[in-house]
Amino acid sequence: MRAHRSSACRFGSGFTLVELLAAIAIVAVLGGIVLVGVAKVRASAQRTQCLSNLREVSRGLLLFAADNRGRFPALFLGSKYGNKGPWSQQLVDTGYLSPPPHVLTCPTDEEALKHTATAATATTDYNRKNVGRSYAYAWPAMQPVSGEANRHSPLLVNQVGNPASTFMLVEFRQSTAQDYRWINGCFVGRDIANPNKTQPHGSRMNLSYLDGHVAALPPAEAAKPEHWVIQ
Image (cartoon, rainbow, N blue to C red):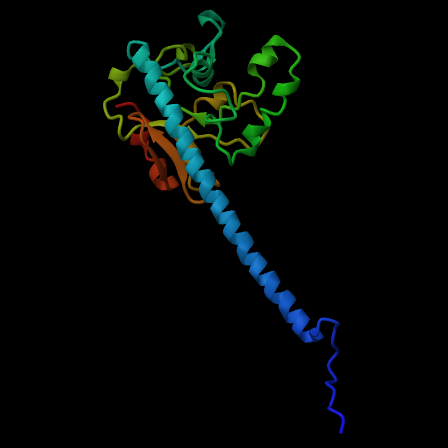
């Protein structure tokens, strides 16, 4: 007597159509889980790298001050003061930091990283020196005396009464291709920590303090006035 044959459609491998579709569905689900996990790992690595960047830039600022009689680099030095540019350019040009896009740019800031793309094709001496500098971190405490005319006045170490609670560096984001190298890319106010804004690392911002330590804070904490004012 002949054995009964299954009426289900079978493929050369011996799988039925239902089994094959089930296997495809399982693979798709597993693939989605893996992609989510990879994205979380990547975001975590970027947050960690950003904090490391902030720590290194803070160290460069403190070393600069130690070597210059307690004076941090001025917020901005124009043509009247040697045309040395913003504080971040001063640190690079004096050897306290490596050039961007390394420690001066958060790895999540794609807009800032775009500013490095044209460095290889610069055609003038000005561009060779400046194009590609993506200074994506800003220092809210850099200008101790308000007013544009006082941008050259350096902050002194002995002016800082509470370095462990006053921000040295904050993350700076722009929605347009504005030049990160200049004044708006090196000085910001506490409105940058507005809770209604999209934060660089999920629900938190990476920051460093004037004593050199770093932290990741929620916007509500980062926006507190005492963190932004030299006391």
